[in-house]
Length: 471
Image (cartoon, rainbow, N blue to C red; front, side):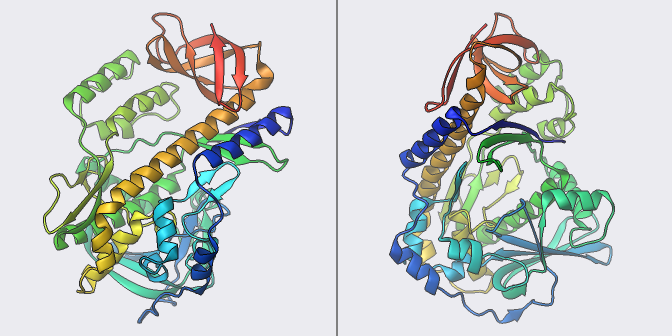
């Protein structure tokens, strides 16, 4: 679907916004710069030379346009009536010395943060955007998963190996979607076919995808900020299915070895399901039969009431965490939305936990003992990821709040129309069309989701990221 952009141009409000965003970054204790010892170690680091040479395999990457931290590369081909999928992951375990300066700093950061005025990387950029990144037309060590799929997209077999490769091309989502829509050949030509089969496998497992519209603060050419909201392209979902397949394979390896770390999420309880059913009935889009994943998958994305339904469904996707185990399996191993055991194992340049998953999986695949550093520190990872996740959530939410306040500052005193997304007591989450802003506002009694209310913008506070509305 087309993206919608609301723009904050350079102005007094823009100056205040820039100061607010800088202050937010400082409050998170998330410096973009690295200590000199970390930079020196990153500059000098080298990964083990792989014995397997896959440089003749035409890998490609697929990421947002302009990305430099390329964690994954893929290669797809037919295999009889089925398929071979090669999925290469940046060899971060090979580059980062256990308990060294880079490792210690990465544990403190937890994950790459995406701020409006630039990224705050997990690793020094010499690694994450250069030497360890799977950039095109350069030789890189990687951890390569090779999957054999049958004609229905079901995994028949897989293996994991350390290999040397050379990615041929860096694809981006928008251009690749347009190419696929035109029926052109290329590295991603089989992705719609394989991706659709994997989506069907997800349905058969009972998995569910929320697929809320993306909301991102971006810089504009004139130095201002913009909020972009758009639904993910089909190619993004197909690409995500390759990552999900790899995460499930990683989980199975670790479960078989009885050592590892899983990404888990409990099944919603009946109380949550009942509440969601009542919300869909109130919205006039009742969920009456079948699994909730099928219901969400079949929603019409062009329907204005689909967004309120998806917002309500977010309550079913709660409780995600990490479960570590060594010697005995955790009481719960499933990620309910995926409907299978699952592990984070495909983004080691940007997420700390993936390095542990990959190091353990590679050792298991090669018949070696799990590295002592990974085993000894395994129990620390859930806490580190929770802390970094809270930091990322605060940064994302408050950044959007500040930009939205800046967007509405010129409109103080005016009246705008807003569509009600979700009722929250005497207030509601509402969507203003122009500028595209989501906010909390008072609503009249008995207001229903999907209805339109008229709101007066009373005041804004850009530094606090707040907007005051009156009916």
